[in-house]
Every structure is written in C-alpha cells, then in structure tokens.
Image (cartoon, rainbow, N blue to C red; front, side, top):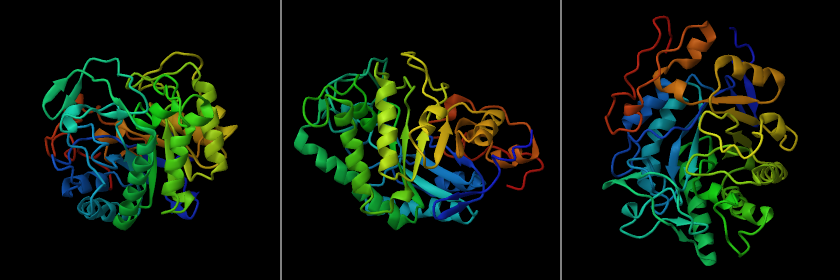
Length: 366
C-alpha cells in the first residue's frame, strides 16, 4: 500500500520532521559494562535514520536507576560526550534524535547496587520469574520504598540528565513513564501504596511525574519534552483497576502543562492486563491536544489508518526496525519486510551480530 500520510512531513512544534515515522525506544544492551555509548551504537542509529524521529533506547539518569545489563547512561559528563557520536550520525542523515530518560525502579535488583535494594514508591515486589543481573539470573526482590525527602533528589537526577542531553546535542528528551519502571509505579495504584503527598489518590500519584516534567522544563522548552505511557500494559507485573481514570487524568494534566508530545503504547502486542476495555488513541485525543504518538504492534496499514483518521500524528515502530534498518524505504516502495530478528540476539553484548549486520533491500538507498 502507499503510505501517503505516514510518509508526509510534520511540523513538530519548532522542528520540521521528514515523515511521521518514529523509531521506538528499544533496549539493545550494547553499551558495555561501563554503560558508555559507543561508535557501534552510533552506526546502529544512523542506519535507521530515515525515520523522522529516532527515540533512543532507555537511558538511565543515575546509578540508582540502573537495572538492565549493559544499557547506556547519561549521568556523567563522559557519557554525554560519548552520546555525541550517535547524535551527530543521526543529524547527518537529516533526522531528529530524542533521548529517553529511564529509572528502572523496582524492576532492578540489589546486584546492580552493591547489595542495596532497588527503590520504588512502595515495597511491592514484581510477581515474575527472574531478572538478569551482572551475576546472572536472580529472583525478583522486594524494593525499598523511597522516603519522602529522597524524592527531590531523584527529580534532580532527571534534571541533571537533561542538562547533559542538551549538551550532547539531542533534539529533545522523552520521560519514560511506561512499562512498570519507576514513574509508572508511582502512577499506578497496584504499586503505589504511599500515604504521603505522592500517593493515595489519582492526583497525588501524578505528582512525581509532574515534578520530573517541571524540573526538566527548567532546562529545555516544554515543546522538546515528551512522555511515554503504557495504560494497557502488563509488562513488569503492571495493571491497576482504576487505570482508565488514572491515565485519562495524567493525559489531561500533561495537556494543561503543554507537554511537547505524548507517546502512548496503545497497542496490546506487549501484553494486556485485561482489567477492562483498552484505552485507545481516540480516548487520549479527547483530553490531549498536542502531538500524539501511537506505538506497539502497528503494521503499515494500521499506522497509515491512525494518521489518516487524525487519531495519531506519528506512529513509532519498534521491532520492525531491528531487522529492517531501511524500514522507511520498504514502506515507501511497498517492499516486503525482512524476517523478524531472532530474539536471542536482541539484548546480547554480541557486538554487531544481530545489531548492525542486517542487510537492506536490494533497491534500498540506505
């Protein structure tokens, strides 16, 4: 099919982008034990920079935020300097690159923190099999609830990360509020059992995300800041009975705060908690009026329909970009997609294998 709307340019606030296709953030674990961005990562992003927007893999804002082997960070000046390789490589292809800001929260383990427990809004353990740590597979642990007076320091970690992201030349940042990581666990009643000003009500559970956004907005104009949400997701043992009220409220409040864009994992390909009807892009359009990005399991026809109907302004593709570095060319020309990449290579520190070694289509210009 001809993806006329998906391939059309878009005025993204003060940035002109060449199409409505975003590369979704995907953890690929190629940053090494020092969590340092590198030339291989720069090559990976440059290969896929026909997308209008590249959103980087989740990038931790502090050592406390770590919880995934060999994922990158942005909490030192050296890390910021190293990220410039990827930024420059994507800009050279005429695309935009946004850094996703991450704190793993309870989806971490004491092996990442010199034996100290991971932190979360409340001491609620993930109900799951195991987590991969620097010492191998381990059972999930019960996190430590953050003290009220510690939270301002976590907010400051986000702000400092954005100072560094700006110095590295990124076009903006995305606050990761999805998939059961720290911000999502503050938002949801399943994981937030606090009795202070950060818990107990829909409004209070939004407070932490609001404070992070306001801190980040002291560094960068609001239109350069996005937030990612997963209202329907079950990943990392999430899903709350009041999810419809909670996430509708969050989107309405972010609209009032003049957020740059809202990135919603509305698709169910990542798992669905089945606690009611899924929240859709149409639901979010009723309360959020800025640029809206859909994500999770979209095929080309579904993405084109979402843009054409006005339900979304952009669509983010994740897994198709792994084995199709020339995904945009394939969409433009109606070429078939390559076979999906073997999952065994997604997160392995295997260098170029399963990362930058996927061939482009014979007719591709990439």
